[in-house]
Length: 550
Image (tube, rainbow, N blue to C red):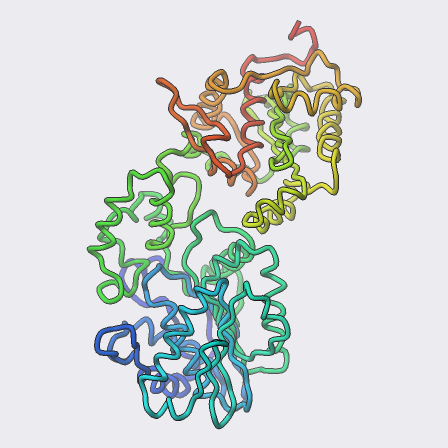
């Protein structure tokens, strides 16, 4: 047996040239056997009910071959144990999933073996089960061989008792599953579930005793910046593909635009749609994609983001919305992972602080800006606090909040007033260095929450001041934009702040553009608003002596 690799370091040129990014099967004979079964299955939602062999592009066959062709029949071991397919919407992902899993059940030699399709919702589960059931009903031989139980989404082989079960993760039915072969559909949605990691551990536990087992993850891009288990897997498989991580038991097949195309916004050119849509011309209409792009391009309600993420696999970042904050275009370029509070204190000649938020449903956002001693460049450091009630009210963001907590940029407090106390302690730490020139607070909200805590811990009340909000904050917003654009402000590039900056929406006010929590809706921007408060004070070019403000 020859050595194999799951890396594809030339993937960019392969996608641009229209060549396959899927490696050849390790065991061609096993691949041929599986393909013979797969190609005969009928796709019942297409006119005339053609077989996979009649209606599929070559990449589909390559994918099936890579899965089943990694099985060593002599040893009974599956050499590639995990697969990850990132592909744009409408490239028949769920139908292919049904065909792969049904093929696995047909070829299964282990009696009473359970095969599992794990979906994030009941709707997604139905999208996988119905095609599989349809494939059986469209074939007399398969109809005689399998029993279909629609009410529990289960297909059972009448002789071997091997089964295919389609389970929705929101039904709490994953516990106790002992499946040898598992397919996870719409993995991006699991990135929004805080318990997804433990769910997968429970679902895959049966593979400990099944060396022939595998797990396949299928997904489109997320409609929000990647988070949770989705981001973790996506980052991992990008590194495997690029050869940065050597893991020949894991194969990632990622249909996404090369960085050069993203940078030049080449994804807006219909001539490039084929890169992330290998089924273009079959299940994907190039004309429809082009028309949809024209309709959604100028929308500010998120439709354009949705289109780019779902139909072109463009990762949602900071600079895709037309109503984005202008500073977002320069934000990522100014990230420096080395920047944290220790770095700020070590390299600053003067520091200003901004604090914002504090409602039970809000983050309590903190920002410290230091003026670099030698260059005059601004150094930004952020942190945030969250009350547990916000986790209950915003369960859709729970996985994201847990990511921020793991990163060390968000504290989820046990009880009030832990958040205020911890902010006060952080301010006092900076104050004790002698570098702190001022603390800027929202005079109507945050000021009332924080002022007494700061004074009680020993911060001089003379340097605690209100920063006018609303239209009076426009100058600080513009100043922050300019500092980023001029490369005169750096920050830590944390996921927390990338998210907040991406959430910020502008609201036209006369000839200016204002950022408000109201304009940003339910999306949190408190640490960013705290940043603008800190900018307001630093823009005055302060010194550290207290008389500066007098």
